[in-house]
Length: 159
Length: 164
Image (cartoon, rainbow over all chains, first blue to last red; front, side, top):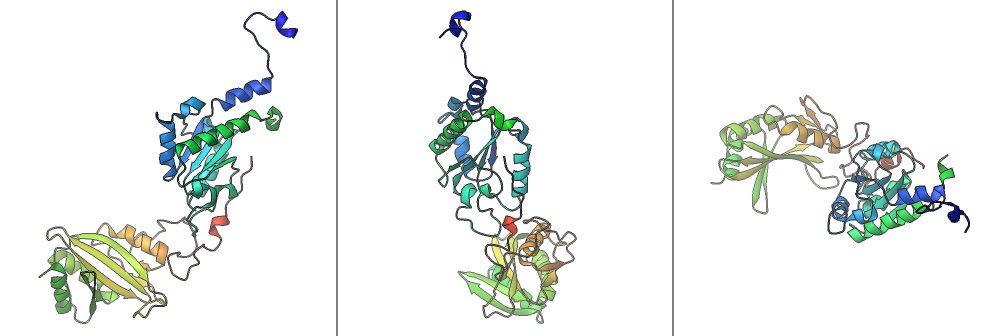
């Protein structure tokens, strides 16, 4: 004990890393890259019935410069892939990525000349959600998994 | 008489040298004309038979089928005043994939022609703006042709990899 005895009442001690990670994990700002029907489920997750605000991730930012969690929900075509790459580059570090649904994760049923066979070929994905489309519970589970990843971050990684 | 019969009779009478027969499927009749005559034939259908609307302009690739030519351009017309449809088709050979543009007749035509050119590689003579419309501008090839590989020629691999 010791230290608390010398501090004024109401103060507590922790490590800077844990405090920062606690803040980041509980206020994820998603960048919705909604390009297909998975985006409908994403909207359902955000709205009142499933309410992603319970996990602190309701502040959807349509500017990549203000967000730290990309949710790729839908199939990515040849013409969209450069856009996705550019938006991913514009997001500030630290950043995470959820690949939502079969199409974003592996191309889904669309194995043709125009569809990227999984966004993880070009951008780093942290959590994949199976389903076509996944239910809102799936997205909530992925957000919780992202929070667990954020809790394990080391500040030294970003120096 | 329906619009289809009227139109087929009129095409036969007015363009006997261009008329290439008719077809019928699922209750719809259509006529084939030589590709050099699509502009006068469609002008007549629009002005005299009240086919005011170009519903669709598309192409079919009959690779490996026993047809007069490989490609077929399909004009789907709709008469707003008669509430009836009519379809006009024109064959386009593989070694000279060209046909006259009808951009002066309908304002709906140029984008449909751009789409057909983009995906089938059929040139529309006279279209003022024949650029790609669906695919990226630097794309090579025309992927809806039946001899184009289904998974493409590696286009979907050519992007930079980002790391964290």
